[in-house]
Each structure stands twice: as structure tokens, then as C-alpha cells.
Image 1: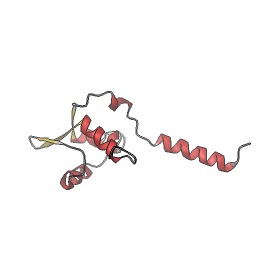
Image 2 (image 1 turned 90 degrees about the horizontal axis):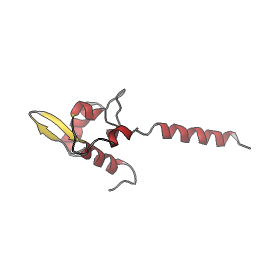
Image 3 (image 1 turned 45 degrees about the vertical axis):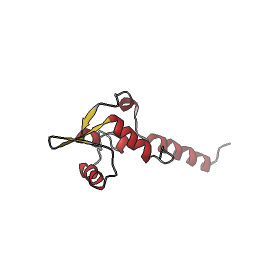
Length: 98
């Protein structure tokens, strides 16, 4: 017999699992692939999505404070490798590699 508290906990767990980023498509990409800053803002490794990308100002603030993912500056534009984004994600998750 299930109580309302059990149902609430189950509902909370389902909601938490649905809020995790879907990394399936991004995990298939080679780690040396470079993507532009705008595409990186929509990357689930940074907490963004195609519907709601992270603000580019956040990436700039992270670059300025040297706490975001590693980047390359080519011709005045910023690029990120998939490997750098994955590493940043791994270190950012609680209980990650750090």
C-alpha cells in the first residue's frame, strides 16, 4: 500500500531525473571537435539547451575569471573543444573528478 508521501517522493525523483541534461548526442562527438561560443552556450555540458542556451556573458565572465572550460581564441572569436566541455562538466558535477 502506497502512501501519499511515497508518491510525492517518486514524483520528485522522476522530476529530478528529467532535469538532467541529455548528453547522448554530445557523447558521440569526437573530443577534438571545435564548436563556436554560441553553440557552446547551448551545450548540455554547460547547463544549456537548444531551447534555453546559457548566456554568452556567462562564458565571458568565466573566461575572465579563469574558471570556465578551456577555450581557443582564433581571429577574435572563441571556440571550445568537446573534450574541454566534457572535462568542465565532469569537474563541475558534485562528486566529480576534482
